[in-house]
Image 1 (cartoon, rainbow, N blue to C red):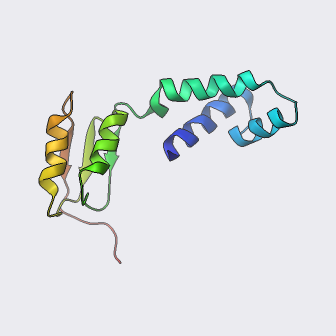
Image 2 (cartoon, rainbow, N blue to C red):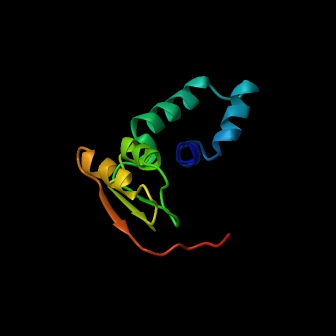
Length: 114
């Protein structure tokens, strides 16, 4: 979700010279046409926020495969994670089942502390 918001903001600024939230406000005030926002929204959806081909990185492990499934559905080409979950095999299965397959690498190192 956050990637879609950031991508829409970037496109809006590139196209209209203003943040997406400002465009929404301008539309409410009647200063801009709704079609400007609709065009940005369509481009964001069509391009999946620029996610296809990117790498999903986590400084922790994925405790369940659902995190990997979300990234794969959005088009990531690889996953980099710490590993170490009792269910790592599920994340491996998600990558192997993807079409095209998604590369995954374990770093073996967590980058945060509780």
